[in-house]
Image (cartoon, rainbow, N blue to C red; front, top):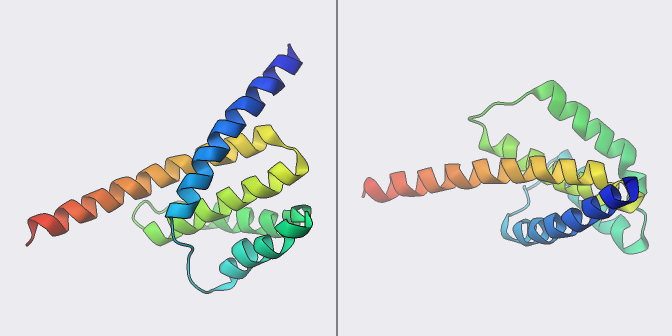
Amino acid sequence: MLGLLVALAGVVAVLVITEEQRRRRSWPAPSGGPDRLMVFDLRDKLAPIGRLDLLRDVQDRIDAYYEHLGVDADDLAIHRRRWAALTNKGDTLLARGDLVRRLRGLCEANRIAERLAAADRRTASGSATSR
């Protein structure tokens, strides 16, 4: 039974990964700042050599930062950075083979992406009606 559950989680993870990679390419990375260095630059340097596991401590600090910061529904910049942190955490979890936690994080990242897309649609429709 556990093997079936793990296999099912793996199949779902592959589907989520494919969609997440498509979305990642469509969202711009945040510019500058220390979180850009930690979240993007280190990942990009460590991934080719197969050492994403080294980001575990960095990712733990990023997670603690966002937990302390809390959720401000109106601050889209924070949501974009949190989305990026969650998707990159998924990469480190994949490198460690932790598919269940990766799937959980990617589902949260997907919910954030949907909120951001809805906010973008509201902004676009508001600017279209004000013309």
